[in-house]
Length: 336
Ligand SMILES: Nc1ncnc2c1ncn2[C@@H]1O[C@H](COP(=O)(O)OP(=O)(O)OP(=O)(O)O)[C@@H](O)[C@H]1O
Ligand code: SF4
Ligand SMILES: [Mg+2]
Image (cartoon, rainbow, N blue to C red; front, side, top):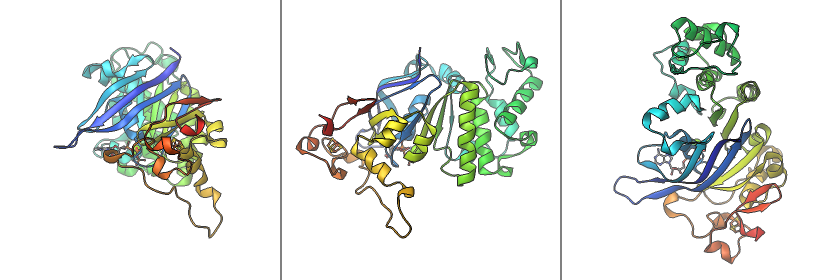
């Protein structure tokens, strides 16, 4: 199996109380190779988080996976039982979020929370850098002393000092909390890490530290990363591949440098031309005209057509399919 993650024709729907079903993900296709990073980019409300949550099967209430496949290293997540799912989270894939403070329990120390995340049965460090000489053979149920040793090693891996083990979340800065989350996500040596806007709540310097840490962990742990961001320049800087999402569909995907230097989809083109570093002092801030459509009332045809300067008649009534142009796959009638 050469893919760490494969999402095929994924459809996710939402049934608001007493209302009609709304489709949020409308046939998402996405693939991440082993030890590869892919950035999922798009405006707020396009469906990035729902895609990530579908992989972990932690969807909001009333939302469900309607059809399609989600394969993590070949394992179909949709077919797992609740018990297998608990096991899968952490072992096959770990996840970090935008607001670490919302996911850390304020009444437990950072150390005890990372320790709690260690999965016992058949625990095996494999080729993980956590496995030192003293850890060889650490398998099955591990003792408290071994757990603590592992956590301390992991804290050092994510650039935190030993004393963080004894500290409570409120004693840690946002950047430190995110490092604790990364430690928790990687403590079971998963092959896939999902990072949902991990730097959005942080200042530029702290965010840079987290990005560098993720890059380091990717190499050291042989990780594949699904990195979610609304910032396409950060995506191009961080990831090998970019997938652009609009209204619950991937409208363009390809190698990051190709997508960024030669965007094919009009939406990707707009995302890039509106980047802040492209304006001069005093210039009006550029925005993509129009709004992200409401999933309850998506435009007919191509969902981007009300905002698209290139729209043709066919765009108003027909949805474009996927077309491959060079290294990039795009959904747009501009190309046929
Ligand atoms: N808990 C929820 N209950 C109901 N609908 C939701 C919920 N979370 C998301 N949605 C719906 O799913 C759509 C996609 O949301 P999602 O959170 O995936 O967007 P996103 O691309 O991650 O946006 P952001 O950049 O703001 O995080 C939203 O527009 C919203 O309509
Ligand atoms: S399909 Fe038509 S409306 Fe949609 S992005 Fe392409 S040109 Fe624009
Ligand atoms: Mg989100």
